[in-house]
Image 1 (cartoon, rainbow, N blue to C red):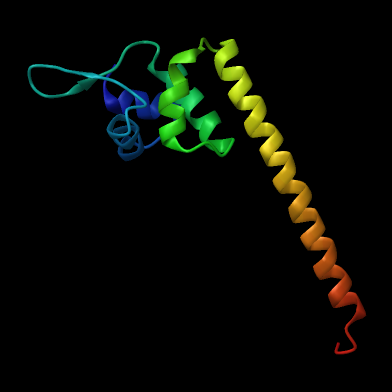
Image 2 (cartoon, rainbow, N blue to C red):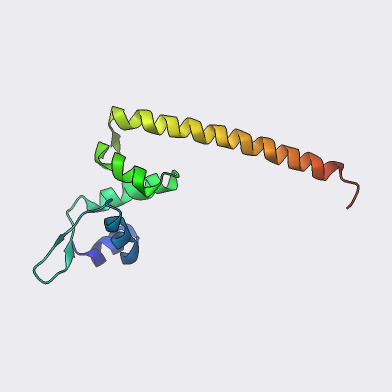
Length: 115
Protein backbone atom coordinates (compact mmCIF):
# COMPACT_ATOMS: atom_id res chain seq x y z
CA UNK A 1 0.00 0.00 0.00
CA UNK A 2 1.35 3.45 -0.92
CA UNK A 3 1.41 6.37 1.50
CA UNK A 4 -1.58 8.09 -0.15
CA UNK A 5 -3.66 4.93 0.20
CA UNK A 6 -2.67 4.60 3.85
CA UNK A 7 -3.58 8.24 4.44
CA UNK A 8 -7.02 7.77 2.85
CA UNK A 9 -7.70 4.54 4.71
CA UNK A 10 -6.70 5.91 8.12
CA UNK A 11 -7.74 9.55 7.79
CA UNK A 12 -4.20 10.59 8.76
CA UNK A 13 -2.36 13.07 6.57
CA UNK A 14 0.62 12.02 4.48
CA UNK A 15 2.72 14.54 6.41
CA UNK A 16 1.77 12.94 9.72
CA UNK A 17 2.51 9.44 8.39
CA UNK A 18 5.98 10.65 7.40
CA UNK A 19 6.41 12.07 10.90
CA UNK A 20 5.43 8.70 12.40
CA UNK A 21 8.16 7.11 10.28
CA UNK A 22 10.72 9.72 11.38
CA UNK A 23 9.85 8.93 15.00
CA UNK A 24 10.27 5.17 14.43
CA UNK A 25 6.59 4.41 14.97
CA UNK A 26 5.79 3.21 11.47
CA UNK A 27 7.93 1.41 8.92
CA UNK A 28 7.83 1.24 5.17
CA UNK A 29 10.04 -0.04 2.44
CA UNK A 30 10.99 1.89 -0.66
CA UNK A 31 10.32 0.82 -4.20
CA UNK A 32 13.11 1.21 -6.76
CA UNK A 33 11.46 4.49 -7.76
CA UNK A 34 11.62 5.70 -4.14
CA UNK A 35 7.94 5.42 -3.25
CA UNK A 36 7.01 4.31 0.25
CA UNK A 37 5.11 1.04 0.56
CA UNK A 38 3.44 -0.21 3.71
CA UNK A 39 2.30 -3.64 4.83
CA UNK A 40 -1.35 -4.61 5.16
CA UNK A 41 -0.97 -4.21 8.95
CA UNK A 42 -0.04 -0.52 8.65
CA UNK A 43 -3.62 0.80 9.10
CA UNK A 44 -3.90 -1.15 12.36
CA UNK A 45 -0.54 0.20 13.54
CA UNK A 46 -1.61 3.76 12.70
CA UNK A 47 -4.80 3.17 14.69
CA UNK A 48 -2.73 2.07 17.69
CA UNK A 49 -0.47 5.11 17.34
CA UNK A 50 -3.47 7.44 17.23
CA UNK A 51 -5.09 5.79 20.27
CA UNK A 52 -1.88 5.98 22.31
CA UNK A 53 -1.34 9.62 21.33
CA UNK A 54 -4.92 10.38 22.37
CA UNK A 55 -4.14 8.73 25.72
CA UNK A 56 -1.40 11.31 26.22
CA UNK A 57 1.63 9.13 25.62
CA UNK A 58 4.64 10.79 23.98
CA UNK A 59 5.95 9.36 20.72
CA UNK A 60 9.20 8.16 22.34
CA UNK A 61 7.15 6.01 24.74
CA UNK A 62 4.86 4.79 21.98
CA UNK A 63 7.91 3.73 19.96
CA UNK A 64 9.05 1.61 22.92
CA UNK A 65 5.72 -0.07 23.67
CA UNK A 66 4.24 -0.39 20.17
CA UNK A 67 5.91 -3.76 19.49
CA UNK A 68 3.99 -5.15 22.48
CA UNK A 69 0.59 -4.11 21.11
CA UNK A 70 -0.91 -6.33 18.43
CA UNK A 71 -4.04 -6.87 16.42
CA UNK A 72 -7.09 -4.73 15.92
CA UNK A 73 -8.32 -5.45 19.48
CA UNK A 74 -5.69 -4.42 20.47
CA UNK A 75 -4.00 -7.22 22.38
CA UNK A 76 -1.68 -5.75 24.97
CA UNK A 77 1.21 -7.82 26.33
CA UNK A 78 1.51 -7.98 30.13
CA UNK A 79 4.76 -5.97 30.21
CA UNK A 80 2.99 -3.03 28.57
CA UNK A 81 -0.22 -3.44 30.56
CA UNK A 82 1.65 -2.61 33.78
CA UNK A 83 3.11 0.53 32.22
CA UNK A 84 -0.29 1.65 30.92
CA UNK A 85 -1.94 0.99 34.27
CA UNK A 86 0.71 3.16 35.95
CA UNK A 87 0.08 5.89 33.38
CA UNK A 88 -3.65 5.64 34.07
CA UNK A 89 -3.07 6.03 37.82
CA UNK A 90 -0.87 9.07 37.12
CA UNK A 91 -3.64 10.60 35.02
CA UNK A 92 -6.14 9.97 37.82
CA UNK A 93 -3.81 11.75 40.26
CA UNK A 94 -3.49 14.71 37.89
CA UNK A 95 -7.27 14.87 37.45
CA UNK A 96 -7.79 14.95 41.21
CA UNK A 97 -5.23 17.75 41.56
CA UNK A 98 -6.90 19.72 38.76
CA UNK A 99 -10.33 19.25 40.36
CA UNK A 100 -8.97 20.61 43.64
CA UNK A 101 -7.45 23.60 41.85
CA UNK A 102 -10.71 24.22 40.01
CA UNK A 103 -12.73 24.04 43.21
CA UNK A 104 -10.35 26.45 44.95
CA UNK A 105 -10.58 28.92 42.09
CA UNK A 106 -14.38 28.63 42.01
CA UNK A 107 -14.48 29.34 45.76
CA UNK A 108 -12.27 32.40 45.34
CA UNK A 109 -14.46 33.73 42.54
CA UNK A 110 -17.66 33.00 44.46
CA UNK A 111 -16.45 34.86 47.55
CA UNK A 112 -15.20 37.87 45.60
CA UNK A 113 -17.10 41.09 46.26
CA UNK A 114 -16.29 42.49 42.83
CA UNK A 115 -18.87 41.43 40.21
